Length: 261
Image (tube, rainbow, N blue to C red; front, side):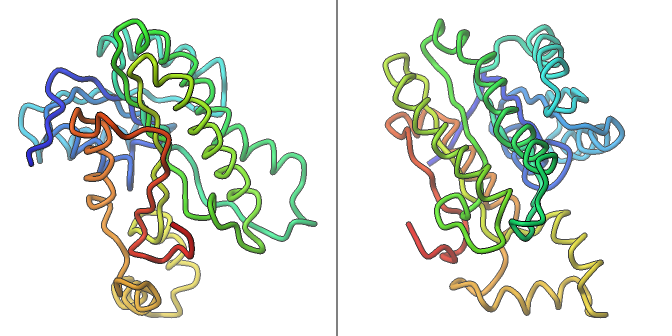
C-alpha cells in the first residue's frame, strides 16, 4: 500500500528534532507541504536542510515559535496559513519529559507543563478546526506517551498532561466526526531521540550511546528501542486517506512495552 499526502499541507510542532523532524521527512516523501514549528530557528533551519537533502523538491517551511505562549501561537498559525495555505494536517508533538516526586512539583512546574503539552494543542486545534470543518477534510494527531494510558509513580506532571491530551483527543474526535475531521493520538514508548541522547550524557556511565540503548532495549518485548521513522510511518498513515475510518483512538508505538492496549 502506497501512502500519499499529495496536495496536503501539514503543520508539525516540536518539528526541529526527533519525532517531529522524522515526521517532517516522511510526510514530505509522501508529497505533503510541511511546516515545522519549534522554538530555535537555527535548529529548524538544520531540520529543513536535512529533509530537503533527503527528499529533493520537498516543500518545507519553518516557523519559530514557543507554543506555550498563546500570542505567539496565534501569530505563527497566521503566518503558516499565509505561507502554506490551509492546514490540512496538524500534529501536536511539542513537549519534553518532565517528571518528579509529586510533593516536590510546584504550581509553576504544573503550569509550564500544561501550557506546553495541553494548552498548546487546545489553541492550535481551535485555530485549525474551522478551516478543516469548512473543507470537510482534516487530520489531527496528538503525540502522547504510553504513560497517558498507564501512569506510573513519579510520572507527574508529564503523564497527567498526556492523559489530558488523550481525553482531548476523544472529545474532539466525537465532535469533529460529522465534519470528516479525524482526531487520533499516538503514544510513544522508548524511541531514539535527542531526549534519550541527553539522558545518556547524564546517566550513561561511560558506555557508548549505542551500547547503553541496546542494554535498555532488552527490557522491551521487541528487544530494542524504536526508530523515529517507525513512529513517523504510523503518523503518515493516520494523516492519509488510507486511514479514513480511524478516529478517536490512541495507538501505542512502543514495541509492546505498555501494559495496556
